[in-house]
Length: 147
Image (tube, rainbow, N blue to C red; front, side, top):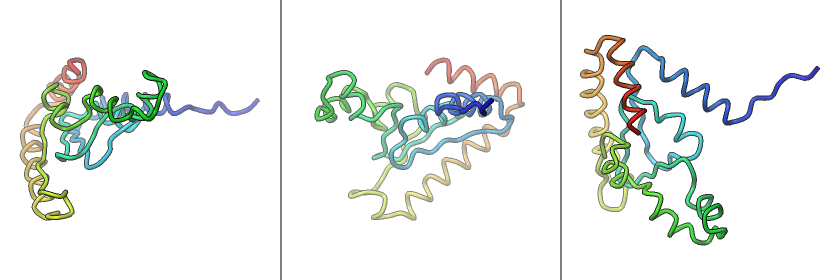
């Protein structure tokens, strides 16, 4: 008898289950393109933060366009409808914070962006570490359910 091969879906589900029960704070940071299974895997974080020009979605715009419009060349239109930008996701309460980037992108002032991200992470960890484990897990569950 052969060994059972796990699919990506099962691996993502297991990751989400494991992460949802971790008894330590989880802060997920999207710095570029958080998509597909990776986007699902980090969605159980206590906080989700994105760089201003990052995108976060469970499906690429090309994949969405291929499925919905039967035409992957409509990826731009799909991306607009998907609401995958940091501003869209903040407005929808999917993410908790947007870290601003300088004109032209993070590479133009990496140290400042990194300092701002560090400041946010330290602030949130200080808040989250004050919660007892039961409250931390309960708030994590509630946040995920609202999403």
